[in-house]
Image 1 (cartoon, rainbow, N blue to C red):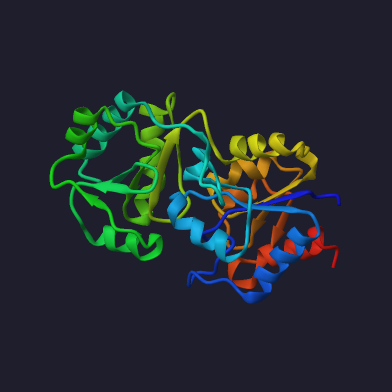
Image 2 (tube, rainbow, N blue to C red):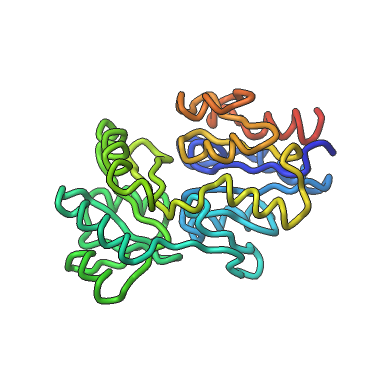
Length: 270
């Protein structure tokens, strides 16, 4: 088997815009795994949000979440690797965000924390399927009182503002945090030491899988590190121009089962 590992992003890549995936795509995953391949998700989602899909597909082994800041075993729940944002760095970022009145969330592994609910909360809840911890007071206060080191921070805003916010935050905090996006209304941030590429590399080393034996599939800027790292980097047709600049191949869109196409072509030889 030339490609021993296939890693896929989830939102905008594996699932369609209506948050479903086809039976045919699920069957392609199962056939690839039965053949001896390793299929894995690398997502910006919370671990608890992606885990039901992993179990539904019958996946075992690892899942990469929080943009690469967490690697966890699907079956046992063991945290294999985690990398949080230092609480003092998180506090500085939170103060910057609050001074500009952006809606934002902090993540404590399997829960997300907000000051108060807004329509953005409802949007996030609709696809994460989890309710937030609502503080009722500023998040900066929570960080100080608990010396809280989040695994991820995220702003939700109008799509046309995302790129500008990322550029501005990079100028101020780029030495300590990694800023990117996975969906058009999100600004996501994790510790600069990690990304999806470093996480994929760590899992590959656990299994003795070489870089050239890996396919990574994604659609957004947060996928670029793993697309660049992979022996075969793939971006679905609906992906961003930035992500496509790192791709070796463009697959059909997420709504056209692009992941299935790649699995059949390279994983199953069909």
